[in-house]
Amino acid sequence: MAASKKTLTAESTLPGEWTVVLSRRGRQRRNPPLPKTLVQKQQQLPWAPTDFEINFVRESKLMQKIQITLKKLEISQFFLTLLDQIETPEMMSCFHRVLSSEVKMKMVIYGIGSVESYESPRLQLSLAILLKRRVSWIGDIEVFDPILSATESRVLEALGCSVLSINEQGRRQAQTPTLFFMPHCEAELYDNLLQANWGVQELNCLVVFGNSFETYEQHLSEFKNSSIIDSTRNILAVRRFTDEFRIKTVSDDYFGAFHDSSWHFFSPVLDTELQLSNC
Image (cartoon, rainbow, N blue to C red; front, side):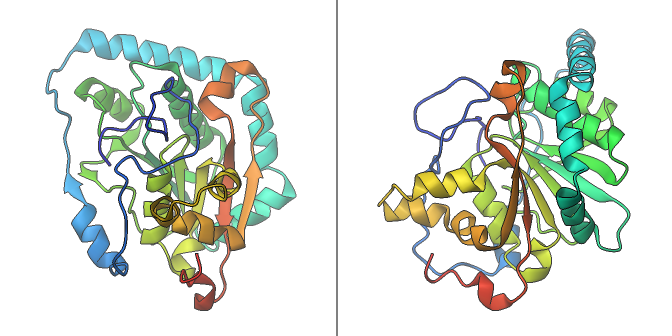
């Protein structure tokens, strides 16, 4: 992914907002899909912040902003409601199924945006950190966004997160239970993730927190453009075996950062369910 912008249309919107949809690049996948391992090798590129400045004043100010956001979010009705949702029998059953015999579930954050410049990315990062602190089975956190600065990367590391040095283009193949935390990312990024994990075993290892796939399906049904449908074909196909739980934003304070977000769990049983010929 190129510079990460939390918007899915060609027209600019406020940071943190999204509307359904399209791949920014208008990419058309007319050729047969490549094997997952080959796609991954082609797409993974070394990455480092474009700025190399170490600025302790900026780091201190950013850390202070994030600590304020953490404290605000931790006592909010939004966060308490989210924790209650996670603890419902329906969702706990889904989490336990993904965990299987594992004790911890790694968290991978894609497309977080600039936590230094905007409140919505700070709220999203703070939610991820609080989930790790409050939910015993959430393990280590890895973060990537190509727009992260050196200052943001150093602060993220100080908060206990690992900043990836590879741009995976969203194509991380889940070998163990993994929570992909991706609020308001581009549709193409979700599709890349699903494509890289388009197997029964891999999909059963995934949890995706991000834009509602149900909403994508509703909006995309209005489009006749084949390139648009093709760029989101895995999102549409995965709906057949997805359990989706929408979150409640509760108040306007958290609407911009989390509106229309859902938890997604996938439970294909047979390889034949993964055929994309009719999607």
